[in-house]
Image (tube, rainbow, N blue to C red; front, top):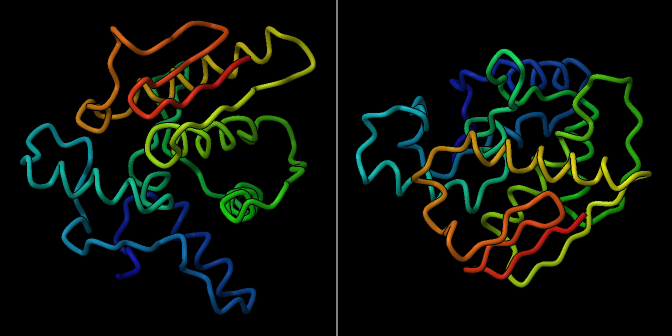
Length: 188
């Protein structure tokens, strides 16, 4: 295991520096990389060998921080943006991964919902088995919008990381998404 201080996601490097400047000793845990061969490797490189695709798949399955740092692309009207780490979404992810309930208060337009969707996408795609989740909100349309956000996020992930998805057997509509292979369901 190493800390990937060569990542191209500058928000992670900046967060590490911020925490270090504040005297926090454990200021790099979100830079963890288990497979050193992946340092500097772009998961979106169209010329990746099968070996590196398999290495990335394995890293994504065991390393949430790698997933959000290197793989996640947030869909925007201009294309996509990288996952931007801030104190709020760092604390939320850390606590949620420890199964601690969280109430997050951040100003508007700080990707609170997308930050949660990113966590759920990792669980839904690679970690959980026989998982049932409900997206609830003040209105059904907002819950359905969060399912759309999840689908849009998954749509940005390289296809080789989604080989377990089967459009013929999986469910994908505004009220429910389901991966048949791992029996994971998210409902609005």
